[in-house]
Length: 285
Image 1 (tube, rainbow, N blue to C red):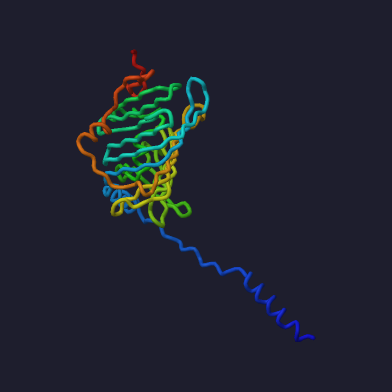
Image 2: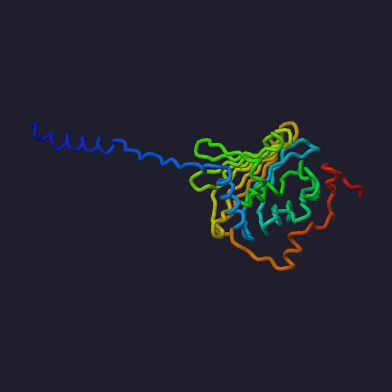
């Protein structure tokens, strides 16, 4: 009789052996950069490798209607065109509203257009004015940096620290933190960028992921979320999900450059706001 139980005992042993936890391999700790200069040099090199590109996808725009104090949502198909170092064009199309949102910039100017009837506004500013883009729903410079073209200023304004798996580059002006870049050490790509105003108040941040190498050592995230903080703790956000296959180098002829990288016509908008002295001034019609 005892012999009959031997196979059963063997099966039980095998089952429990199979359920035993696997030995976990230790997670490799990737060391951070040793200096600000070393960290910045990697980011600078990648930004300098940026090429003109085109991408398509979808985006979700969430914003507050200043008049009605209600949160709006717009689901859009999106086209993104970039011509480094300073030219960008984003177009979001709603089902019933083509070109519901347009965001763009060139070397001298930047602009943003929103066509839904409840807002119908055109913003136009120049880079030469300090803080001229503050108060804009989405800052073109923020979108540029989200797409991997980082603005790296003088080295002495930066400091380097470590937080978990990230190197954190912090930029200060007159002792006040105005930007933080969280760089994942394993691939040394930015995963989050925080922006602050001259008083140290948070004004925006971006979350980035799903990077694709578009050209040698130039990477673009397919997942981008930009959040802008307004008054009374309100938040506006733009979440972009680009089709990875659509992110490709591009060439723009003279006609395309004129169309995409210059301010569109101001016709048809209820409100025209021009940046003057760092403030948005509505133009009389």
